[in-house]
Amino acid sequence: MPARLRPTAPIAANAVLVGDPGRALMLAQALLAEPKMSNHARGLWGYSGRTPAGRELSVQATGMGGPSAALVLADLAKLGVRRAVRVGTCTALDPQLPPGQLLAIEEARAWGGGGAGAAALPDRDLSTQLLAELENEASVASVASLDTLHRGGGAAPVPAGDAADMQTAALFARGSELGVAIAAVLIVTESASGERLDDEASELAARRAGTAASAIL
Image 1: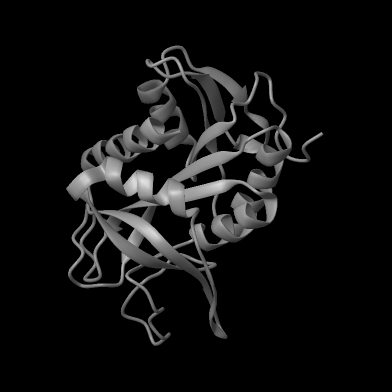
Image 2: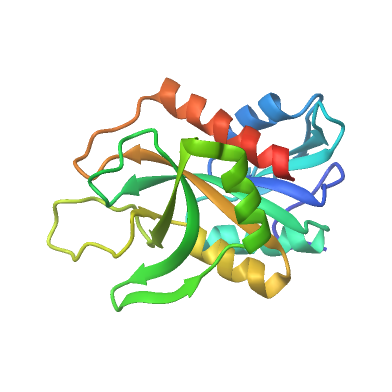
């Protein structure tokens, strides 16, 4: 029995993973014909159902940060998830990346006080399919996954990577251990100069990323 999730509906073998429970609800309504809540324990909202094409799919919130995401993924693996796409948000480190840009992640490294950890990689086939589905809407990028939200302008060293988030490295590493194929598409919600994406544009970008993820799962 999973330690954190308490499923009230069957969990599909394919899943879209998001950090925010509100985004999980929004994507479930956008991607599933008749979404049913499959988890509400610990505030980790999850939904299962069928896509309009008839494929079974789950949309699951993973909470904030790498440790929470890794634990949720372990529970999902016990429940039969075998492929997953993270649809998340990030802060740009590359000044050329504008708010709203979609990033298909080719490498993630955990970043802490001691610097960068070992590279964690997505599943090659799933990542290739995701990039093809996004066509020219996404840039291939690397991400530094931090324990806290990245805020530029301080005295701390800038992490190495195109963008910073809080989950992708942990999900890639844990997915490899569990035999779960994982890819990730991130939305730049804040530029390197501090310009932020508004809520409406953020939701539109998340819908586009979620649609691409659903299409390959």
